[in-house]
Length: 315
Image (cartoon, rainbow, N blue to C red; front, side):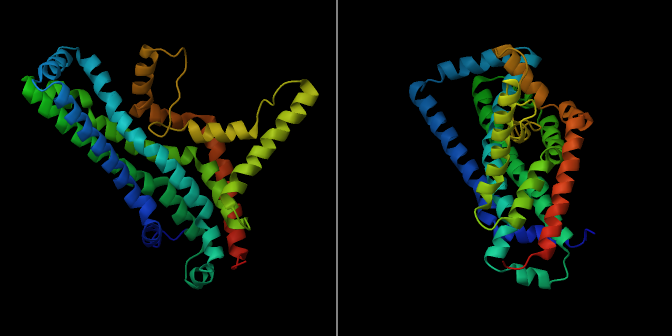
């Protein structure tokens, strides 16, 4: 059973051991984005030192309809979030494939097993760290950047003498956007549970190079599926494991990933982004059968990881 009273300190332990990936990395990303923002502002002032074009553009923006301003404001705000999610996914991949492998490699598993913490609680803490705690830290950092972005926009709005609320803050819809992100985090964890379970399982048994094994096994299975399908029907396999693996990684709940349906044009992209990042879309994912089938697969993989760690020593 999972000991809920032990989970907070175990999650803190994960942050202590991976502070560069979990805390400093999002701060570095935020710093780089701020540097680019400041450079862009200085460049704009250099080529438009009279602020003629800048203020005209702001007045034109303020003259748009409410829905158009909402769309145009939401795109850069979501773009700031996406800057974090790509790095975060890479961080989580290497964290999970090393979570149980590293403790065997450095023999610290002997110490951790001497403590009154069950294998189930230990693995649950690593899952909660990857699925909830780390995304929350990255998204909070992105939220701080969004506020800075709006403050900069407010400065331009004041210079152009247009109303701040109706031009900048109301179209941004930060409460709705942040609520959507908060809902997306646990939904994304459920969606990614088979991947998380697989990475932890590989981390529990891999003798070395767990990241390679985690990618190679589904890749090779998918390759052989296509090979035998081509021999049998002269077409690629309908349910290729590698394709399912990639789709599960890439088609999560936004702002964790992007996927649009239909023809790709400006109108489809803009409406697709707004729909994908809506609170309703994130909640609607909970009604999909493939999500819950993946949860069952993920739970089975996690159970296997728990059983393997229960028998593990430092070998």
